[in-house]
Length: 267
View (cartoon, one colour):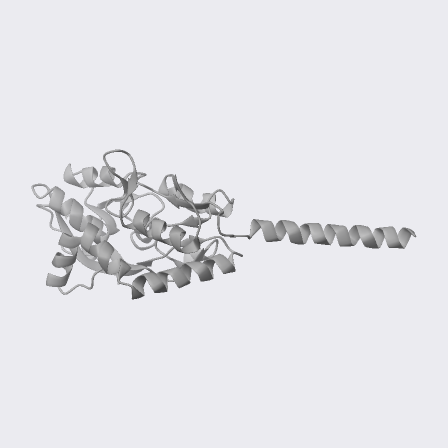
């Protein structure tokens, strides 16, 4: 009798564990899809004049949620908080122009890429810097946004340069414009935009010195959700969804890149 009770108890525990595991990894239709974003990155993730989330990443998130039949909840936060929030289950996905790096893959999974870009430089208008190699000279200083691949690359490849790191990329631009930093390392399209906005004080070195791809972040163990996201991306691309987003939000950038012989980011 004791053995029978022990057996039934073990079965009950096993069933409870399976039930809990199934619930934690469930992604049923109708369940809110919580997507984490840093909304300070126009034109990809931003807010319109009314404070409503907008941009390429937001529209992509809306289309993904609609495809999965799930209500969307965008969870805004600093970029550096996205991966911790995903790992602790506070969000279901990261869709925030995040580069899929080997380092990040150690703690989270990624979808197939949805954008292809690279690291570029914003420098002072009168600077003698012409390439990334010039930042290896003694006495150089670099601005970087926290927890981005620009910061990671600088730490690994420019160990002798002084680094100033901010949560807000506009602060990095200001460091360069006011001469407190020699360069800002960031993605190609953002560098183009900031150079266009500050033509009297800055210029962009837009040819990427490192190629990158952006993908949607997914918690490890959520393979079914990853397959759903990959299926959505394939279908969205086949129906020219990325081309339409490019025309809506990145028309000038697309023209510039094509004229320069550089492939467009969304493809």
